Image 1 (cartoon, rainbow, N blue to C red):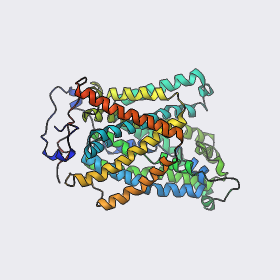
Image 2: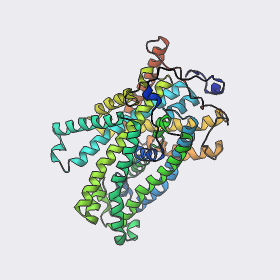
Image 3: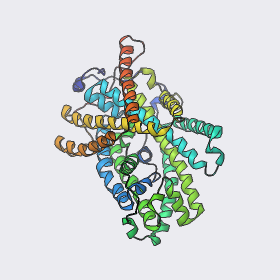
Image 4: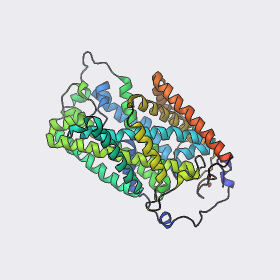
Length: 473
């Protein structure tokens, strides 16, 4: 099979190999993700509900908040979902965007993509147990600070990671349950709000002394509507990915946008408050105003359940990305080892969990901003890989293909690329420093792995590919 150092243009000529008989029986009989669990897995990779959309109103007022959640999906979400659908069906293996960058530009690009996205992902994951504890502390004040809070974060992280260890199919069906239960109070709240809606509130009135915070506004939109490509790292676990992936992504885009817009239209139209009160968590306050304390508690419980779903979905993405990098030969073979009991990449789950615990006690403001900066670098490389693969491998079998030629694809990727560049330009000095150090570390890691491979310190895969990858139409 093709080694990572070889040119991806030679994929068509490579011989096909098969797996050996040493694979444990549990691996051979593994279950695959079907359409409905995959839809909710994507939903939790991206959103997890309307929790966190409120600061858009605080930053720019009701009208721009509504327009943002109406327009931004077409600028960002749709292009990212289309790219994910095309490349996940063309390269249906675990690793996703790492595979795309490696096949387009070689192993160095694949390693950098993996490092940027992995670091961004695990830092993002670390925020979800903390978010759950922050909601629970309203009902259990002892979780406010000190050792009870630290122990709670530790235990919740370990329990959620163990759930992930039990299998992606279980995680998928758990996501379905968590998604339905956490969205239910917003559906009820929206129905209660209908008779009280005043359309003029959607426009809002200029408020003296309140300036628009464009950084907060765009970061809120970006934070709530990105990570569509994260699910690509589990493509090898999906049943009939060539058909399931495009349909799941289309459904998830529509479902996610409606989950943001309907409560936002309902609450803004029915509740008359100053826009400065629209901080994170305001939906719970609005639920109390519209339906009473019982609905407020349900929204808060829904936020905890949403945090669990977000943790599970994104931990799966990071763990299977590690396995995919081992398959490509970018990490030692041991990083791709799977559990005999649950057929999950337990070492990837363990590494992700340990890093998550390590960063969960740090100040998140600059760390998350730095993670977003690295994610933006990865997305720029992803757009470039997508367009280059169209030029480099025009005959590649693409079960789903974005119906545009290369110039059209350039235009489609240009607008989100400009947006990413703007976000990166307005970073702080601390963000630049931390992101720079992490990037230097990622470069050093690549050459360390290259040295270990050359000296045969660890065993590495030869970058084996599935027999469908690289075949012609």
